[in-house]
Image (cartoon, rainbow, N blue to C red; front, side):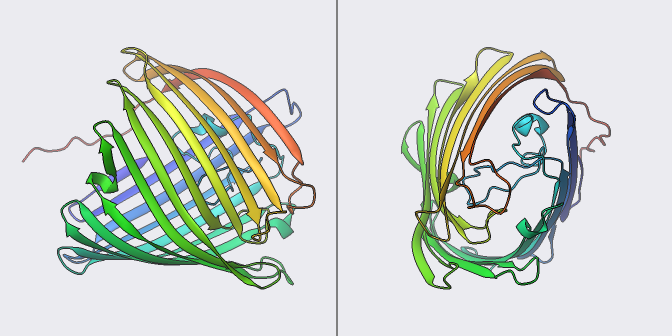
Length: 355
């Protein structure tokens, strides 16, 4: 990664790559590469502009539950700072590439009111399986007003559409209305000394293959609990509406995530997480698929810039035959254990000059 900061602008670039060999596929290597560039600049005293672009390429693909209504990923690109997060778990030897771009404006109408507008586009291409590709474009607008120091109200609108990637493919669209009240610091409600709660509600609509528009309630809730001085536990639920590569219609998805983590001592830390999601293709409860997984990681600091880690991950999915245009196994499960050493070092650093 490389970043530059000036008085009014920030530019950041990130790149990552992975290469691995597993006994489950001894004749082929898994590989992936990812790159991204982002820009944030203040145009006027009240208006700022943000833009980003990302691109990735990988030799394997797996459905992932993000809790945000999506599930397309490239090995090593879900979290650019943690390439090992998907090592050994992709279930399809299917080369794919993803390109994502976004641009947005934020304007402060007054000392208490702001407006955010954004445009996003994403193209997913499966090499050798063109009919499963996905081209998405979406736009959104959110208005927020601060009533008092810790109380704000907001309303937002988002529209998303998939465009035909091959001739004769249908075009689908969905839209959602997001509104609510935020109370507390950091848009969270502190219900106890060490407990915070975040909630969000909305309304979504989309067209299924029958071309009939359907409406559904959307929303999310997250509960965070501090445990002692260095441990914390989190539980979240989200119902979202979006598009997922491998499914041509909008996907309504319910996702639950739980995690716990903290320090075992001065040099060791442990984190564990579990997730489960169920998606409904085209609002049809009879056309559903499940994704689930568990991850546990232990990290031990060996030096200021060197650490050793061990990680165990389990991933599984249940996708009925014929539901996805990808050659996904109807029933799949895999576990992986990874251990290694991680080194962090600055390649270039310009010290700040004190004024």
